[in-house]
Length: 323
Image 1 (cartoon, rainbow, N blue to C red):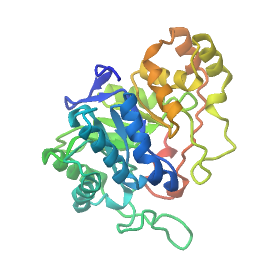
Image 2: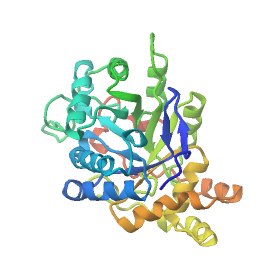
Image 3: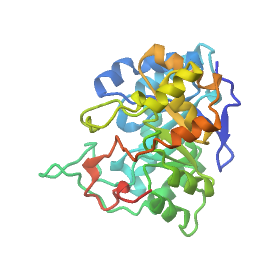
Image 4: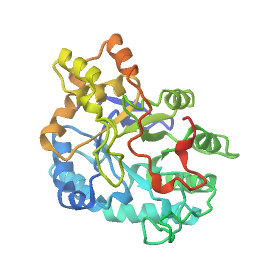
């Protein structure tokens, strides 16, 4: 199992394991396989599990965690579980009920981290993606600072140990950091981050405010046609990554994960393939040289696989800023 010391301290004093297991999959896979692969991930040593209300598999992931607690593999406090507040629940009065609903689905007493999934508030209701007649998301005018205050209350109530954000640009982060009466800073900003989009400016900004950057799509993308531009190059076929992998007798995926850990980024490895889940935990078995790191820095090309174009007309759409 994974060495528990492989974690970083958050700005609220809690610790987050630097390697996490991502549970997102297309709905048909997410429901049927999530429990089995999450149990397997815990068995091979993953202690940080990343999920979200919108993935629609929290029930299965919760069952996996509880079964591994029940059989003595882990204690609840060994597991770091992240859930995310969806866009339809960003109004202040909807935040706590959304978290309580996730806890009820998970059958857990608390989550370790609760984050705002996107800075885009949309019309509340059961519909996850409420769209107008032109297929555009129906925006809701919500002050994200008010959303943040509700998250602070959830932390004080013990429903979540830590609170953070996801997909925020530096200006949106700044708005929360500069909020009058701020009680807790975001502990993290979870964003797409990989060698083709290394987020150096956002990472430097986050580090300067003691905010951890958490990388999703760290291995590129799952090539899901509804989310990703399939014309983009495949990260794991990059010649630089492949050469470094060959030199270390590792896979390009492991090099991409190791790169993040060495630059102080918490990295999520998403896979529903048992062989690769087991492989991804081997990220601690080798080290990249400063030359390797520099070479990987050099392949950055600002390729964003997950543009979330559905939200591009929203006034808070985050990805038009440089970082």
